Amino acid sequence: MKVLLFNGSPHKEGCTFTALSEIQKTLNEEGINSEIYHIGTKSISGCRACRACAKLGKCVIDDGVNEFLEYAKDFDAFILGSPVYYAAVAGGAVSFLNRAFFTAFMSGRGDIFLHKPGAAVVSARRAGTTAALDQLNRYFTITQMPIISGRYWNMVHGQTPDDVRQDLEGMQNMRILARNMAYYLKCIEAGKNSGIELPKQEEVVFTNFIR
Image 1 (cartoon, rainbow, N blue to C red):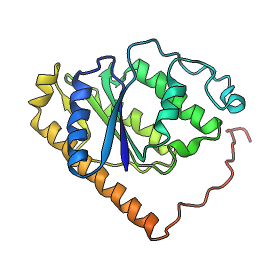
Image 2 (image 1 turned 135 degrees about the vertical axis):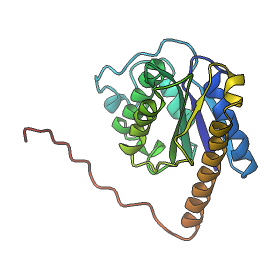
Image 3 (image 1 turned 180 degrees about the horizontal axis):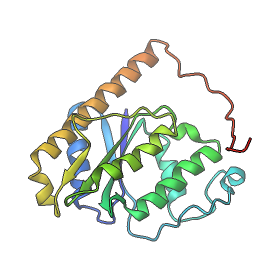
Image 4 (image 1 turned 30 degrees about the horizontal axis):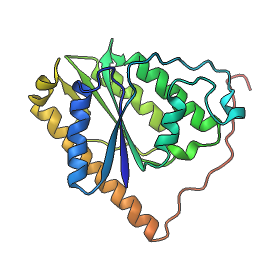
């Protein structure tokens, strides 16, 4: 069982990384493997809505999203982390995740995320955290991914990694979140071993508000 920890911050070892590292440490203690994936600082293009991914099987833009999807396919769960910018998820992370989830669905590779547990984590100096959490959770709810929670909203506060380490409640909740994730992964594994199948899928129906 492996969990992919997505670091959507431009700072490789900043506040978001500090929160994810606490999660990773606890997951390892629970016998769950994990890796942190940093999106880097290169410019990430937003989705063009060209839908070329449906024909190509990958995004037409070559800036790391396709490599991420190939890397992510072997993981059993995902934790998306981002700093809070203007009470929202960091812009680069939004562009990256929009295209990753859309490409996976349109290219017929939705099983990269389908039915795999997900959790969101945000870091902020002060405020805007709950709005950013809500934004990240939408990637899970549109992809049939069970959302794993902690004891409180999954956030840490501080302007530097040292500040975050002093957020005792926030760091505790990272550990609680990690244990909850480990528990559900073990339950899923036990269900598979008992012959419990995944929910039946129907062909997707698309409608709009005028028909």
